[in-house]
Length: 279
Image (cartoon, rainbow, N blue to C red; front, side):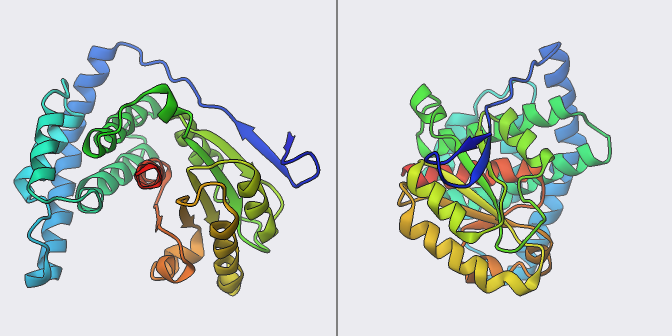
């Protein structure tokens, strides 16, 4: 148990969690099959639905169905070769990281998490897939996976004011740690604490949970205070919890940068926000 600054609130710190990939060839073959049979069809269905709802408002620079399928197979397939060149072509064609995230990264990570929840794949399978999805962000943004970048994978998971439900659940923490993140958790639900910790320690991302609708205003105040005091002026802020699930429009109103449906999706959102923080 650590104390921020020696006299501040108690926080837990958990280092990255090494994950051994047993029988890599078998694992990659299994992941490739999962992608072809279960992930890509879901991605294309979501993409077609989103395009249908957007109609003429759909951005011309969003990846098309064929590009989504090709990229998913390139990055998550058995070899993973050719992804860098393909990503560069998409970027040169005007595709943004936000579009790539919305059309490919987030839904893929979310679906891998759902397959894990349904016991169709195991934790190592998901970790392998999420690791490759993270690599997309690195390649797309031109960030090399060097030691200096790894040291920036620091996330603080805090409880919203007056809340008992923790965004830093054991599952979310485990997926973040398996993805190479240093995870800090704030254990006492006072909004000043996240800001105080962020004023003393550099974080790439800070996450809050909101379980009750009545604390929306307090969380907005907390987020504003974090942005004011954070050592990282570009810190990414993500929110989750049952209140956000019921009211996804609150993400922007609260002053946050995004939300995620499950552990794997949280990892990809955190990596996207970190890329923006370092850009």
